[in-house]
Length: 633
Image (cartoon, rainbow, N blue to C red; front, top):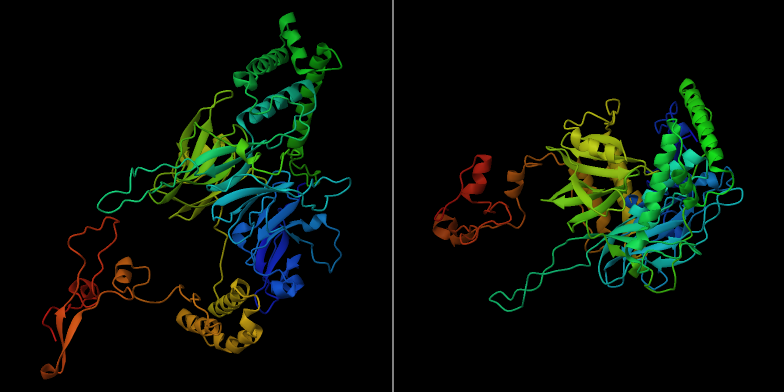
């Protein structure tokens, strides 16, 4: 429909301890959601003052924001929290809720069907287009990263979206190596067939083809190599491995599929159905000729039988095509004249196949194959697959920077790929992401802090590299304003720190400490803080109540001379070199015997700067002072 909704994760201002909450906000034109009026705040459908608080008390807890996802169909959502739980739910508009009800959600099992832990401490979640399946990237028992697929049940019900019914949790990759960045897409053959059959559907008036994902793409480092031949040598060389990842594809087939060939039947070239493909392309060309007024000869007419087109004669198909063209022209004219019509249109949802996972072992996982014509590289993510040509957009790490790289595929049945780097010169990719529907890609660039939004088509994505000045498709941020109120920010930081310690601490009972009373004890001090250093002192005192190691307070914007100055920061390294001093009673002081310097036999291969003693000339001259020398008192 034309109604647009966004799910927002925020801390609820109506709670005393900044509890996480999910909000459903309307974002279509003419609607302006606001959190400025405390008397008319939107009500969360989950968490906050509705159902927030510690998980020990049955609350939502602390959500890990980077794991929160909404399915491309917009019917389901999932996330993980600081307790390691992976949670799923139907969107609240598809639940039977009363005014005071909190939306229902459920926790996924903590193991997949092969017994590997599926704990949400470090996970990535990606829904299939129709919302039936959830790919979970998680750590196995041996700490290798694997991908499991959770069957949540078909959301298509008789009259409403079906409730989630967790079925099989299938391990989709072996645990002998790392597999990351799952992405639901289409194989080259599948994408070609959908595009081709959609063209035939428009021409012949036949049912549109079913557009579903038939492959799960992912990255894996399973092809490992080392250039260390043996452990013998003066420095006892040990094997090391480059962090190269290849692009893999896991093909999927539907339960009770009528196609007997499948993906790996040993049929060789015949599996590509080249002759059938050529016949269908020939029919499309013939139909285009008809549209231009030319007649089909008998050889072209015979091609109609290739597709099993039953029913009326081929001449009737041609007449139907002409009527379809007239109808399309009429609809186009109506849409242009009613461009401002605000009538809601029925929502259209993508669908998923009923995947045949086979037996409860790794046989399904071992159907995966590496896309050999995409070279291995230091890839970190699969961003998307273009909707028009099946090209894969990857994130590649080059010289410490993230580069947007598109693997542009050649027309089927070729399996060649051409690598195109898409980051404009002079800019650094700072952030990226997909729209919920996967129709658009947003890219943030530094140092200009511009964000551009482009469609996930080959033309849309390649347009980024052509726009050297980032003037096209950029987000208009001129009207965005931010009000900074330090006193409120300090209170928010304090509440967040208290809640995060409550939800991240290893012991849910916090070793018996009355943690709410700790919040009340130090809260009056927050109101007296006038700068960030003072707030950090309060946070340190609060955290010290836990008497736990590995609990630190650091960071923040400090008003110090060396803040963001690399040279001054390197000169103020805690625990740096000092000096060798000797007590001299006659001079009533200490004599400098030596001031250490960096080893002159070693160069700085990593490009870092030499570290000198805080008393050294090279350090003190940065602030206009004279350094000490050997013999000084």
